[in-house]
Length: 153
Ligand code: UDP
Ligand code: MG
Image (tube, rainbow, N blue to C red; front, side):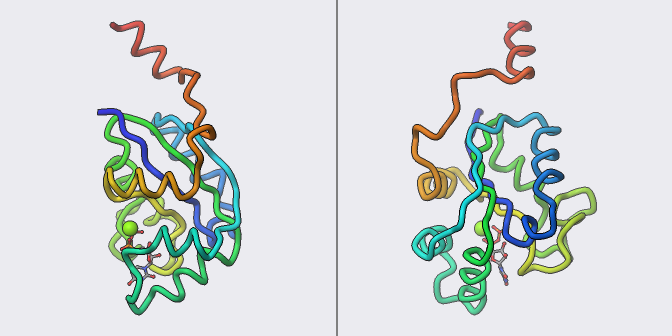
Protein backbone atom coordinates (compact mmCIF):
# COMPACT_ATOMS: atom_id res chain seq x y z
CA UNK A 1 0.00 0.00 0.00
CA UNK A 2 1.33 3.45 -0.89
CA UNK A 3 2.08 5.42 2.25
CA UNK A 4 3.48 8.82 3.15
CA UNK A 5 5.89 9.31 6.01
CA UNK A 6 7.54 12.30 7.65
CA UNK A 7 11.34 12.23 7.68
CA UNK A 8 13.66 14.79 9.23
CA UNK A 9 17.43 14.99 8.90
CA UNK A 10 18.25 16.10 12.43
CA UNK A 11 20.52 19.00 13.49
CA UNK A 12 23.55 16.79 14.16
CA UNK A 13 23.47 15.39 10.61
CA UNK A 14 23.02 18.87 9.12
CA UNK A 15 26.01 20.12 11.11
CA UNK A 16 28.10 17.09 10.20
CA UNK A 17 27.48 17.50 6.48
CA UNK A 18 25.44 14.31 6.06
CA UNK A 19 22.39 15.76 4.28
CA UNK A 20 23.41 14.45 0.86
CA UNK A 21 24.34 10.97 2.04
CA UNK A 22 21.05 10.53 3.90
CA UNK A 23 18.93 11.78 1.00
CA UNK A 24 20.88 9.46 -1.33
CA UNK A 25 19.87 6.42 0.72
CA UNK A 26 16.21 7.38 0.42
CA UNK A 27 16.52 7.96 -3.33
CA UNK A 28 18.53 4.77 -3.86
CA UNK A 29 15.82 2.75 -2.15
CA UNK A 30 13.40 4.07 -4.77
CA UNK A 31 11.10 6.10 -2.57
CA UNK A 32 9.65 9.33 -3.90
CA UNK A 33 10.43 12.66 -2.24
CA UNK A 34 7.26 14.72 -2.57
CA UNK A 35 8.20 17.60 -0.22
CA UNK A 36 11.53 18.86 1.08
CA UNK A 37 12.74 21.96 2.93
CA UNK A 38 15.31 23.19 5.42
CA UNK A 39 13.82 24.99 8.40
CA UNK A 40 14.48 26.12 11.94
CA UNK A 41 12.10 24.17 14.17
CA UNK A 42 10.07 26.46 16.47
CA UNK A 43 9.40 25.62 20.12
CA UNK A 44 5.77 25.10 19.16
CA UNK A 45 6.61 22.67 16.36
CA UNK A 46 9.04 20.80 18.62
CA UNK A 47 6.43 20.45 21.37
CA UNK A 48 3.83 19.20 18.87
CA UNK A 49 6.27 16.81 17.19
CA UNK A 50 7.50 15.24 20.44
CA UNK A 51 4.26 15.50 22.48
CA UNK A 52 4.33 11.72 23.17
CA UNK A 53 7.66 12.17 25.00
CA UNK A 54 6.61 15.14 27.16
CA UNK A 55 7.64 14.52 30.79
CA UNK A 56 10.32 11.92 29.98
CA UNK A 57 13.86 12.57 31.26
CA UNK A 58 15.29 13.12 27.77
CA UNK A 59 12.50 15.48 26.63
CA UNK A 60 14.10 18.85 27.54
CA UNK A 61 17.33 17.99 25.75
CA UNK A 62 15.44 16.59 22.78
CA UNK A 63 13.54 19.87 22.30
CA UNK A 64 16.72 21.91 22.87
CA UNK A 65 18.51 19.78 20.27
CA UNK A 66 15.83 19.81 17.55
CA UNK A 67 15.47 23.62 17.82
CA UNK A 68 19.24 24.28 17.94
CA UNK A 69 20.20 24.06 14.26
CA UNK A 70 18.06 23.69 11.12
CA UNK A 71 16.62 20.35 10.07
CA UNK A 72 15.82 19.08 6.59
CA UNK A 73 12.17 18.02 6.56
CA UNK A 74 10.75 15.69 3.94
CA UNK A 75 7.63 13.83 3.00
CA UNK A 76 8.50 10.45 1.49
CA UNK A 77 6.05 8.34 -0.48
CA UNK A 78 6.24 4.69 -1.44
CA UNK A 79 4.88 1.20 -0.97
CA UNK A 80 5.05 0.42 2.75
CA UNK A 81 7.19 3.57 3.18
CA UNK A 82 6.55 4.04 6.92
CA UNK A 83 8.02 0.72 8.03
CA UNK A 84 10.45 0.75 5.10
CA UNK A 85 11.98 4.04 6.22
CA UNK A 86 12.16 2.82 9.83
CA UNK A 87 14.15 -0.16 8.55
CA UNK A 88 16.49 2.03 6.50
CA UNK A 89 16.94 4.31 9.56
CA UNK A 90 17.75 1.51 12.00
CA UNK A 91 16.99 1.26 15.70
CA UNK A 92 16.64 4.37 17.89
CA UNK A 93 19.73 3.52 19.92
CA UNK A 94 22.62 3.26 17.46
CA UNK A 95 24.21 0.67 19.76
CA UNK A 96 21.44 -1.66 18.54
CA UNK A 97 21.20 -0.35 14.97
CA UNK A 98 22.41 -2.74 12.28
CA UNK A 99 25.41 -1.81 10.16
CA UNK A 100 24.04 -0.68 6.80
CA UNK A 101 21.26 1.38 8.37
CA UNK A 102 21.55 5.17 8.53
CA UNK A 103 21.79 5.21 12.33
CA UNK A 104 24.03 2.13 12.38
CA UNK A 105 26.45 3.78 9.99
CA UNK A 106 26.33 7.46 10.97
CA UNK A 107 25.15 7.82 14.57
CA UNK A 108 27.57 7.63 17.51
CA UNK A 109 24.94 7.87 20.29
CA UNK A 110 21.19 7.89 20.93
CA UNK A 111 20.77 11.64 21.53
CA UNK A 112 22.47 12.29 18.20
CA UNK A 113 20.83 9.71 15.97
CA UNK A 114 20.78 11.80 12.77
CA UNK A 115 17.29 11.05 11.44
CA UNK A 116 13.64 11.05 12.47
CA UNK A 117 10.93 8.96 10.82
CA UNK A 118 7.26 8.50 11.66
CA UNK A 119 6.47 5.25 13.49
CA UNK A 120 2.97 4.61 12.09
CA UNK A 121 0.18 5.97 9.86
CA UNK A 122 -1.34 8.25 12.53
CA UNK A 123 1.97 9.80 13.54
CA UNK A 124 2.91 10.22 9.88
CA UNK A 125 -0.25 12.20 9.16
CA UNK A 126 0.13 14.25 12.35
CA UNK A 127 3.84 15.00 11.81
CA UNK A 128 3.44 15.92 8.12
CA UNK A 129 0.79 18.48 9.14
CA UNK A 130 3.18 20.05 11.71
CA UNK A 131 5.78 20.82 9.07
CA UNK A 132 4.01 21.05 5.70
CA UNK A 133 0.96 22.68 4.17
CA UNK A 134 -0.94 20.49 1.69
CA UNK A 135 0.08 22.79 -1.19
CA UNK A 136 3.77 22.15 -0.42
CA UNK A 137 3.35 18.52 -1.52
CA UNK A 138 4.62 18.01 -5.11
CA UNK A 139 2.37 15.25 -6.39
CA UNK A 140 1.99 16.03 -10.10
CA UNK A 141 5.04 14.17 -11.38
CA UNK A 142 6.23 10.58 -11.79
CA UNK A 143 9.48 8.95 -10.78
CA UNK A 144 11.26 6.68 -13.26
CA UNK A 145 10.12 3.76 -11.10
CA UNK A 146 6.47 4.81 -11.35
CA UNK A 147 6.80 5.05 -15.15
CA UNK A 148 8.48 1.63 -15.25
CA UNK A 149 5.62 0.12 -13.22
CA UNK A 150 2.99 1.72 -15.47
CA UNK A 151 4.58 0.05 -18.52
CA UNK A 152 4.14 -3.34 -16.86
CA UNK A 153 0.39 -2.85 -16.33
N1 UDP B 1 15.84 9.82 22.73
C1 UDP B 1 16.86 10.05 23.62
N2 UDP B 1 16.98 9.22 24.71
C2 UDP B 1 16.12 8.18 24.92
C3 UDP B 1 15.09 7.95 24.01
C4 UDP B 1 14.97 8.79 22.92
O1 UDP B 1 17.66 10.96 23.46
O2 UDP B 1 16.27 7.45 25.92
C5 UDP B 1 15.71 10.72 21.58
C6 UDP B 1 16.27 10.14 20.31
O3 UDP B 1 16.86 11.21 19.57
C7 UDP B 1 15.04 9.62 19.60
C8 UDP B 1 13.98 10.63 20.01
O4 UDP B 1 14.32 10.96 21.34
O5 UDP B 1 15.23 9.56 18.20
C9 UDP B 1 12.55 10.14 19.94
O6 UDP B 1 12.46 8.91 20.62
P1 UDP B 1 11.66 7.68 20.01
O7 UDP B 1 11.54 6.64 21.06
O8 UDP B 1 10.39 8.19 19.40
O9 UDP B 1 12.64 7.12 18.87
P2 UDP B 1 12.58 7.18 17.28
O10 UDP B 1 11.13 7.13 16.87
O11 UDP B 1 13.26 8.47 16.87
O12 UDP B 1 13.35 5.99 16.83
MG1 MG C 1 9.49 8.18 17.53
